[in-house]
Each structure stands twice: as C-alpha cells, then as structure tokens.
Length: 315
Image (cartoon, rainbow, N blue to C red; front, top):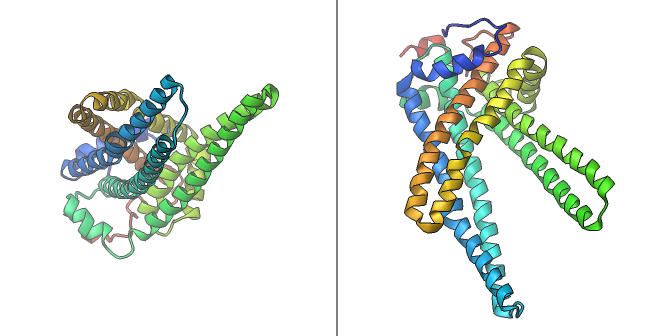
C-alpha cells in the first residue's frame, strides 16, 4: 500500500502522483512510451496532411487577390476540393484522437490504480490480468463515451456562441456583444473544468467498475466540489498549465515542417515525449486525487480497484 501524506495538505496528492511512476518503472516506462507515441500520431496528422493543404489554399487565395482578377471556376473548384479534403482529414483526426485518447487514458489509469494499491505489474501482466479480465473495461468505456459526448456538445455550443459573436461584431451591437463575450468566457472556463471532471470520472470507473457513466460523473463532481475543493482546483490548474509549458515546442514543429518535413517531425517527436510525460503526471494525479478523496470519507477501501482479488495482484 502506498504511504499516505497528511490529507490536510492540499499538495499531498500531487507529491504522491510524482512519486508513483518511480515505484513501478517497468510498467510506467512503456505506458509513457504509449502516451508519447499516441500524441505523435495524433499531432502528425495535422503537421503532415492538414497544414500543407491549408498553406496551399492560403497561397492560392493570396495569388488570386494579387492578380485582382477574381476567382475562376477552376480555381474555385480547386479551393472547394481542398476544403473538403481538410474537413475529411479533420474528421479522421478527431476519430483517431478519440480512439487513442481512450487507450492511453485506460492504460495510464489502470497503471496508476494498481501501483497505488501496491501491485507491481509489468505492462503485459497489467493487460492480461487486469484490463482483459472480465468486464473491467466496460465501466471506463461507458464513462469515456458519456463524457466525450458531453464534451462534444459543449464544444458545439461554444462554436455557435463564437459564430453569434462574430455576427454581432459586424452589426455593431456592442452592449449585447459584451454580455455574450462574458457568457462565452464563463462557458469556456466551465468546459475546462468539465474536462478535468471527466478525467476524475474515468479514474473513478477504473478504480470502481460499478461507477460508470453519469454515476461516475456525479461522484467526481461531489469529490471535487465538496470533499476536496482545494485539491480539485489544483488538479484543474495542473491539467491546463502543464501543457502550456510545451506548447511552444509544438508551434516550433509547425514552423519547421514548412521548411523541412523531416525537421518538423523531429521537433514534433520531442514535443510528443515531453507532452507524454506531462500527461502521465496529471493522469496519475487524477487517480491519486480520487483515492485520497474517497479515503478521507472512508467511502471505499483503498485496495478495491477494478474488482481484482488481492491474491492475484502479487507479482
């Protein structure tokens, strides 16, 4: 069993999350590599396929405007074809990101849960004895599907609000625009908080397979808003501040890929490794947060993860 720091210290779960991977490096090393590879694959779609198409379209529009001759039928058809390609590739990228997102979150949460509970699995043992045993993945999969659907719906609302704001800017409705801008900002902040709430709810489904879907979301909400508010706020800040540290590296990859695709992919690989490490930190933090919040209320015993008998966990 992992040693516990005082629950009154709001940084205790963060300290535990940072130490957790060192307790089982034979598991967390391949999990880290999975996170890095998944990040590289998802981001490379934009670098290799979408960005060149966008650059070609921008270049074509610029040349047409410089000639000041307007769009010909052939040029209009070419731009329309490029826009359709970008849309289709973007849809494929979203599907890829969702699939990879579930895989990497499931691996990271199960790795953090089993290690926190005292077991020392390798990746193969984790997959064979825990993840592939019975209906262990059913709960996390249902919860992930629910939170993904809600997140997509929330994103659609934000896009609609942004479009409405753009229309009002053209109409010069400044007073209504300021109110709608404030509502948009609050909605955006709520979406950011919901994304972290979704992480904790998936962690809840991994730890306790009986909590799934809306039940897991309600449990995560209660823990973050009633049981451990300070730690919940710290988890939100951690989840969104850490990626900003490596965001300039991704932008550099986009810039270098315009000059040399090989150089851009090399920089992107560096970004993927850094972002994978940060993902491992905040996914482990979400798991530890759930455990410590539950333990503080004595809701469930700490070793009740994934319904695995204790005798099978000794490796």
